[in-house]
Image 1 (cartoon, helix red, strand yellow):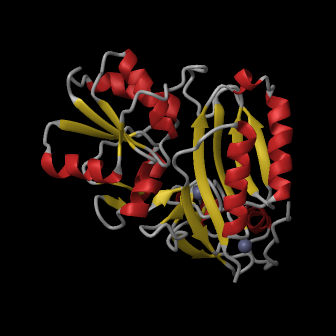
Image 2 (cartoon, rainbow, N blue to C red):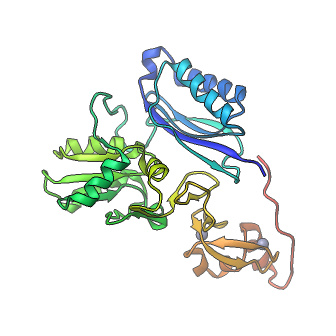
Image 3 (cartoon, rainbow, N blue to C red):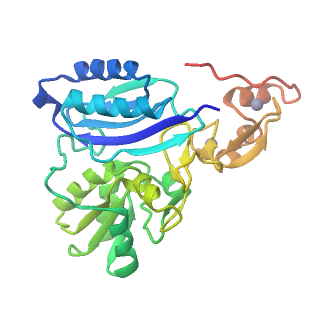
Length: 308
Ligand SMILES: [Zn+2]
Ligand SMILES: [Zn+2]
C-alpha cells in the first residue's frame, strides 16, 4: 500500500518585495513541484503562501520544503505533517488570490514580531488553570460538527467572512481573554487582527491550529476528528485519515451514514441532509441518482470517477 507524506503550512510575506508578480510565482512553484513530484494546492498572491501538499516519500517532501524556503528566502516555522494511505490530492495546482485566506480585508497581514500564539501546552494550561476566558472555534459549522475543543463556542458560520458579524453579536467584554483556533492557524492570524481592530487586546490563537495540537496532544482537550480540505475528509486523534467520514457523493459535505445504492449495489457514506432527500437517499452518486429516478427497477454499474 502506498503511503503519502502530507504537510500543511502558511507563511505571510510580501512577494512583491521580491519583485515578483503572482503569475511568475505560480510558474516557479510549479517547477519546484515537478522537481519533487509534489501534489496538492498552494494558494498565493501578494500576501504569501497557504498550502497543503503531498509527496510519495518523506525525503521528497523534506527536499521540497527546503527548496521552497531557499528559493523564496523565507523561514517557515511550523509545518504540520501527517501521513495517509488515502491519496490526498490527484494533482498539483496553484491558485492566485487577493488573500491567501479569505476574510475580506486583503493586505492586512500579521506582523512577525508580535506574538499572540499559544503552544499546545500553553493552550492546555489555560484550559486547566483559568476560568475567565472565552474559547471560540473560528471554523465553519460542518468542521465544528466533526470535532472541536472541550468547551468551545460554535459560531455556526458558513464561511470565515461571517465570523466578525458573529463575534459582534456576542457582546463579549473588551478585557476578556479570548482563545481562538482553526485547522492550521491561518484563519486565526487574520481573525486576531480583526478582533484587535475592535478593541480586544487579549486575543490568543492556538499555534499551528488543531493539526499541530493533535501532533503533540492526541486524546486530550480536542474531541472527535479534524476536518481537512483534501480527500482524507478528516483526520483522527493520531492524524490518520478518518475511518468514519467520507465525502457525501451528492453534496461534498462529510458523510457518515452508510447506504447501499439501489442502482449499482455499492456502498456509500451520505450526509444527514442528503439522507432526507428522496432521490438521493438510496443512491451512491449523482449519476446513480439520475438513472434510478428515470428507471427505479433497472440496475446498472457504478460509474467510475474519471481520473484527472
Ligand atoms: Zn450530502
Ligand atoms: Zn450507485
